[in-house]
Length: 257
Image (cartoon, rainbow, N blue to C red; front, top):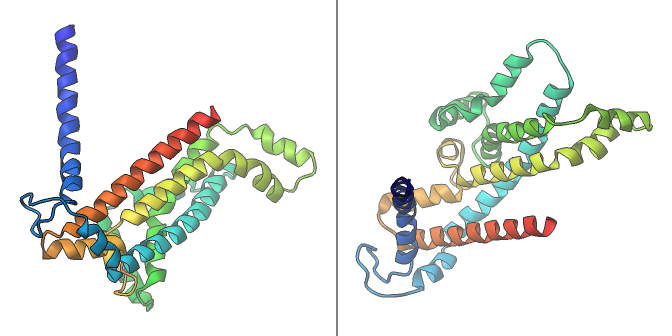
């Protein structure tokens, strides 16, 4: 039994090393003074300095945050409303509607990007911030909807009935009783939508203009030219930010306990 445990433990270590070794190497080479970033030539912070002086990257980051915030807000509204309507009201074709709502989660991104581009061109809509936000909302809202539906599965119907018996209108009962109950699902879905929007490349490639290019598009353009140490520096910043957010989340959970 001890040998089996040691075997599985060693295999787990190898799998983790396979996944995390490239990340560790990327972080280390973000401090490499070599322009080619192939061999180690010495420690430097100049790539981080150049990163903050690159106006195109800063503008792309601002575009990404703007699009992600807008798409997340719309996805929360559409996803929460859709989940509640499917849960609260029963009507014909409900399964078909639910299936159609979740299709963007499984459709290949390149197909979605091309189809949205054809739709915008057919309807005469110029590519820009609006088209990117619409495109991101399209594939983000099903994740919010799924998270809210999971929360609704455990909803006690007596909560809404009690609010109505106490004189609340259906709208007030939903806003003051149902929404607070759904908040964990809404927040988790919103975080997923924001992360997906910030990371999206393929759909954005087909639905954006040069002025509305997001950070993933800029990084992709830089990577096509060749190895750029600033990409390593930028990736390191995002890795550190992610770790800090996870630590903050764990701290909040412990405080609530």
